[in-house]
Image 1 (tube, rainbow, N blue to C red):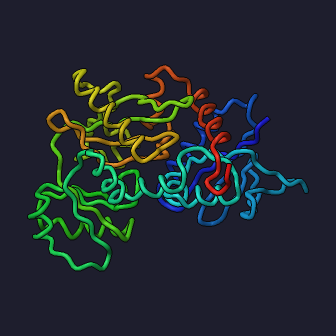
Image 2: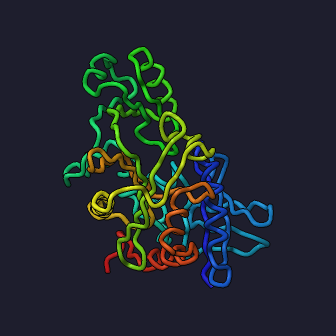
Image 3: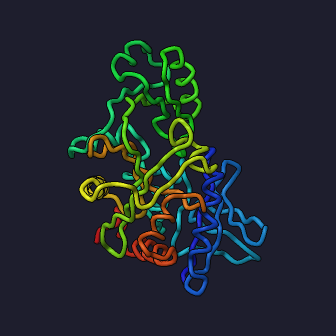
Length: 330
């Protein structure tokens, strides 16, 4: 029986969502196939959690001891949203110790977690996006010049963050500085983007049984100003699957989402956000470890596609075990 570490937590406020995702993934892993262990990676430490007891993880080989026995894992199922699980750090670590893991490699994780860099790469493949300006903490900037460039309203967001943490929609110039301060609380890099007036959709794309598959398209109708944390996790939005699109626009979204996935050599689960303007999907961001809490979109799309979560987990683990390490020559 394969021994699987279901890794959750993280070092940011997204850890709360990660722990919820962990439970759905843990329960979706067939206990007749897998010996499952919850592993927490938190600021206060790394530990396996078994029946309420905590066992420290040895970072040298990601093992732990229980009753004098050394326990190792055959594969990791990473469910951390944010750092260090979604931005490439853990992926690089697992590759260095030659431990198979789900999802995409460290480069794709780091690239997609950095909104500015991901947009820059995908734009080279002709994928549209909002006009944007990038600011480092400490940079000198003029709010007026930025607003003249991107227009109002605009979005001010952390460049490297998820779950809509730190994002503001700015309607007037005198709101800009407060929005920048809020974003800098989450990250030292900030992205200011022009407002796109269109239909927001979330698109699940994955490698399923060896093939790139668009799992589903979900239309987002937020009850708040935009699809913020409350809209995502506290029920303040309508998530309509399938999205209410014409067949032509639906196919265009599917084509662009699959192209974006393939262009950066993605693998594993992903959920990308687009705003459709005049029939053309504009890329916003890509999440490489999408939420798996009961309120999350990706499980809803799997249900719509008629794929059981257990089958998704099996496909991910099979892919992880068969992926060759970049450090080892074949």
